[in-house]
Image 1 (cartoon, rainbow, N blue to C red):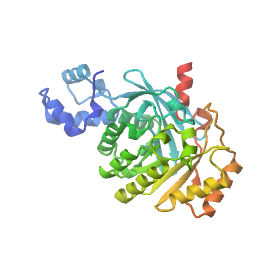
Image 2: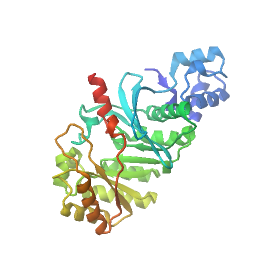
Image 3: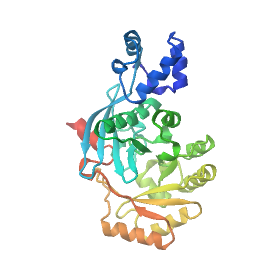
Image 4: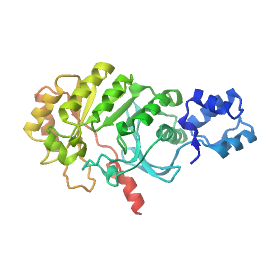
Length: 341
């Protein structure tokens, strides 16, 4: 594949262009174009000879939207095609405060969580920083054609484990603000608990909202649905989350997919409260999506009962609003259906 220009910061692009004898100010022009998702032939303030040279050596954007599915609630599911033909997904969600994009960080995933469709076929490859950024760029271009709006928040909760692709994900975070104007406080990063990289994220000075995919209250229980529990104990994950809060000052979100017969007993509620009571965090209870797994979700009554038990114990908790249920909103579902067809 050609070199992807969105993998560069503007200053890095200046250095890259200087090796080709291209004037420094051209890098600023090109950076503005690629940050808007514009291909070389449409960069109207560049001479044709330069546009031809750039097209021969580089790719401008690392992804394109090949399918969009619009839900009754306004949620849009994107299927992106990368330059090598690989497919990833994203979800554009509209809230009262603006638009949020759920973005992917890997093609597939090697974590093997039983309730997640995106990892059924394992990990194919990591996304580069520019490919992750391309998801945001394409979604902003999509919005620009339809209304005067832009994405205000990004959640790294699509396919892949962000902390399994640490270098590219943190490089993406460094690119996101200058390219799209979204600061780290507008980014949430979901991890199944790779504890060394949670601590590394804190030590490297990042301040995104850390979201822990916990989904169980004992190690034995967690091993049944999340193979990574064999490597990382709940006690160590919680300790790393406390460390992250201490360094970043950001409240941690604990994600908890409710599964009937697995993790919604009164004892689970007590253990979950005890695990999270010693540092500022919020528990995000998630009604499990149907992903063709053997696990069963909960009905509204069961979800409210578990929430009630948690809040009676003093926990900060809410049930996450489900979006895009009619357009295969869960991670990996649209891609699997699309490739089967």
